[in-house]
Structures are given as C-alpha cells and as structure tokens.
Length: 373
Image (cartoon, rainbow, N blue to C red; front, side, top):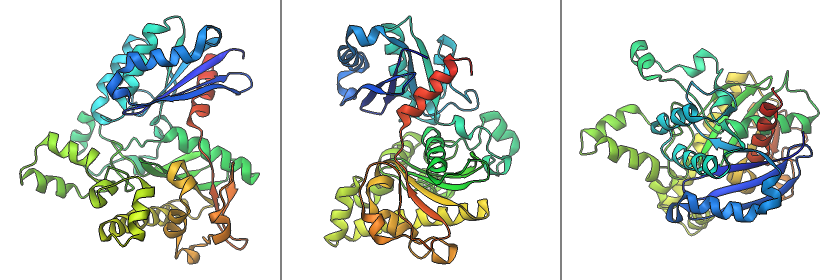
C-alpha cells in the first residue's frame, strides 16, 4: 500500500506526531508540540501542518488517532464520522485526562484535512474480549449493566505491540506463549497475555485502577472514597485528587522518576515510601499474573520507566527467584537500542526490555483498516 499515514498521539498538554510510509513503515517525519493546553489545538495542528509541508501532506492517505477509551462501543480501529466523534465525546467521563485531547485532535484534523480518512485506534480495544471472570466487577448486576460498568483496561496498543515483538525476539509464535507485560510510564499498567490474547489487565473501568502511577493511585479500597465523601470531599474534589494528587505525586510531592530517585538517595522518607509502594504493587501484580497464566515464558518491561529505569526492574523483581525469575545485574544496567534480555542464563522465566512503538502500531492498524482487514 502506497502513501503515508499521519499518526497523532495527543496527551493532556502535548501532541506527538509522526508520518510513516504505509508500505515500508519508514518514518518520514516526527515531532512534538508542547504546551498545547496554552496555545490550543487549532494552533497545535497548524504547527503540524507547517511541519508536513505541501509535498508530504499531499502524499497522506489517512490520519490515525490514539484514543484511550472506546468503552464497549469501539472494539477495533474505526473510521471516524460525526456519530463516532459524538460517541468518543460521550466516553469522556471514563478518561477525563485522555479522551478530551484526542477528541480535540480529531476535530482539528477533520476540519483541516477533510478529504483524508480519519481513523481512531483505541487503547481499550485489545481488552474487549477479556474473559468474563477478569472483566466483571462483583457489583449488583443491574447497576453494572445500566452504567456499562466493567473492566476495560488501557495501554492496549502498547501491550499488544510489545507482546508481538517479544514473541519475535524469542523466536516463538504467539500461540503457546505466556507473557506478563508491564507498561510503566507516567501511566502504568500490567497485562497477562497467553496465545497473543489478554487474560487479565490491571486497569479497570477507567485508567485509575491497578499499578501506582505518576499522579494516579492505582488500586484503592472503594470504602476510602466513601470515607472521604463523608469528610468534606465532593465528586469533583475526588476526581481531582485521584487524577492529579495521588500516586507518586501524592506520596512524595513529585512524579518524575529522576527526581524521585534523587530524593530517595538523599534520604527523603516520603520519596522512599513512594518508591517502595510503587515496587511492592508492581511485584504483587507480577506474582498474581504468574498465577493467572500458570507460569510465564517472559516478563516484559516497556515504556519510559520500564525501558530506562533499571533500578525499578531490579527492585520490582527482587526475591522472585523461587518463581523462576532472576535478573542479571550487569545485563539490567546496559542501555542499548532495541530489545534486550536482562535475565540470567539460569532464569526459568525470561525478563525482557522491549521498546514500545505505539505510533507504528497505530499506523499498522490504519493500514489494515484501509486494506479492508
């Protein structure tokens, strides 16, 4: 397939963009527009259009958009029309940090490039077929059905991509392969994957559940929220607390891992507690997913923290030798491009670092959709 695809990955205050050739998958252009919240999305796209130039823009076949939450409506890459745009808007409440910027990007590109196919690729889609036992909350069935409450997951684009890359690195087909994949960035999630399909994942109805994150708490007893409601919080206050003042930020007053580790090394007790809680939660999920899978062929680290903070990898997997996981300290410290193995030669479970590439994964889904797949 000839032509290019413009991939937009819209964050809360930045816009990553990349143009890939649909045939060769070569990157033709990439960049980031910062502080979009200050300049507005129309201005951000104007910057992208200037970067494209007339020649590159004229060769585009489609625009692919990363959208975090598709609910139960959108379970695969989807051509965007007015109805789909409205549907994504209706799901904003489930991903208030993530769906609004994606929606703004969609509207800006539909207006500026009306002749191109606009394709939404959803982070939740990979988990649409989670086993019922993993997707279901033990709540009143009528209440859950009425509000469409279930576990949707997130980071599915990344989990699916690194699971496939890990299989290729190991020289194994995905059928028969069991993996624990760990996407550790400012947002963080884990997945248990067997035969290329997820059996469980740590995020739930929203991207708040599961692992400790930069500003989000991960798992919290629902009773804590009721307790806070009775002590002066309202719903908006809870939402702000859970999305912006929890996780590492809430515990340590910082969420950049470089700052956090520097504070730990200075003897900051709050930073130490935050780091220990982060690693404890991560270790607990690894152990749980080994049980879900009945053992794993590999544990896979990806995303900013997972790829670039060896201390987290070491400490999160420390003490799991009895479960067949042994990290080689020298391999773990190496910083190299591409996929690398960081487990010892005697580890029964491989430990891999696999760089994620969400933009490439989105481009592939766009190409498949355009080809009628």
